[in-house]
Picture 1: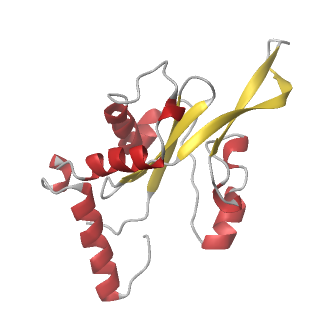
Picture 2: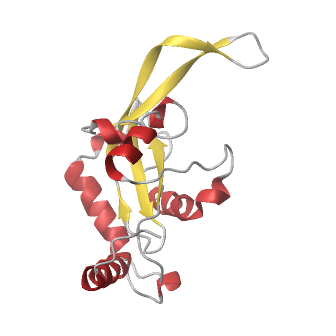
Length: 170
């Protein structure tokens, strides 16, 4: 199995400017759920080719640091170059409207939508709730992992890296 380190991320957007981030490691399916919020930008932007303006939402995980402040493709990950400079982590973007390029995360969002129904406020879940939900996913055996859990697969990968001293994400 390749080394862990390729993460896919997205946001689940709820009512009242609430959001939950999803981070899923591709080789182990290990999931983390950072809490987020949606804030409105004061400015409007023109819709291409329509001459009409629309408001644009910005997404930001609550309690994030300068390196991981922003999400997604617009302003949401505007600091990805700084993240790369600070940590060496390379950031790649899927093409717009191409969810198949982030299949691991899309599958995880489908599992999470059983708990986080569309049209509900997501702010009601606190950090402990999200950690418990992520733990449930990380303890669920997966066929693609030979019926190991994501937690077991991640642990094996981290132990293998530790024993060889190889910290690459290659």
